[in-house]
Image (cartoon, rainbow, N blue to C red):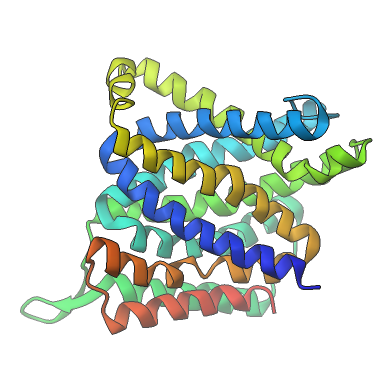
Length: 307
């Protein structure tokens, strides 16, 4: 009873820890370095798990169409989305970076309407507007001679945050298409149980390939290899990988198998609220009442999507 809801709550905690660890690791290893290291680590973790459960380190029964959709999901969600997310951590911190992730349900709803013909209710559109209002409340402030509204954060960081939210939402829709098709192909109960992890593996393959190519083409191979000697940075990269693409993403997919997608997404969207206290405690970041209110309103807007 309430298995899906409990998994969703666990995912929220995992993503909070992931965001905090990734902020530290991004600053020490660089966003590209962290992404290369994180994708490689997650592939190793997932391969070991699939080998232990199914006797094969590679996804079972997946055909070309499954790989296509989940690879597209990995490109949009990991390569584009996470690149934006980790760069936003550098510029505006994980607290605000996670706040922009509340845009993901809106992006998923719009793209689901375009790609899958899913209906968008008036309540969902209202939820989008409320979410954007909550974000605006947190990142805008009055200042200057005429007390005009202005960003209190770097514009580049805000744009990266928006890109991260869009990447997460669109990647989720592509994952849904891929997993729905994949589920019809799986033949063994063991492979079905581990399907979320196998799906994450396929997404991570794309992420690792794309980030590795970027590293090679930009001539940053030697620099990224050198940062692996940073023990503190690698420790936080390990935590971010274990809690994020290995456990967090896989369990988020699993949660939707045991409860409605709406309930799962609403619970998992609470990360911007969960992260406020540890950001204040560990990073000594000032958290204003208006920012707390903005985070609460943003999450409330997310909840409206699924009523």
